[in-house]
Image 1 (cartoon, helix red, strand yellow):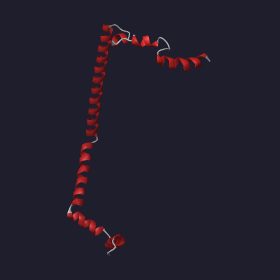
Image 2 (cartoon, rainbow, N blue to C red):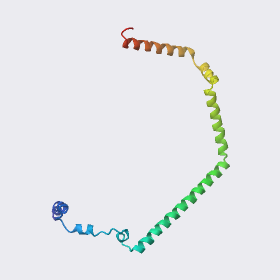
Image 3 (cartoon, one colour):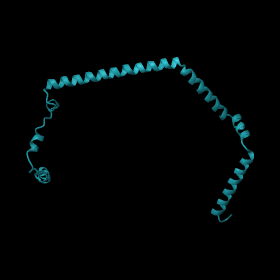
Image 4 (tube, rainbow, N blue to C red):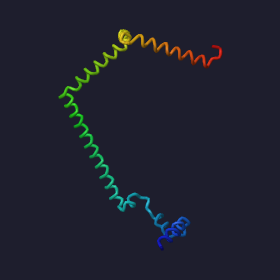
Length: 140
């Protein structure tokens, strides 16, 4: 019960400056990071140096592992001849695309199409356009 009353009455009074001595503790917090960490200046500088050295070691280890992975990738590509296979696949795709883009490729596509079906689609589209135009235009 006392906790409930204290939480209801005590917290609003703290904001008004009537609630207690917590404000002095906030004012006494040191601005120096070494004092905030509970260390002397020399200890704090030594700690910062250690952090920088550890970071440099981690970075060096990361670069070493990255180089090892790159070497492994190169070895696997050479072993399984991946670049050669990939080049063959890319060349085949490029020649197929060139054939499709050429005029002869377009003619071959036209030969494969059903002309009757194409004529039906064209006439249906024209009829649909004509009816829409007649609906919108009062002159026609």
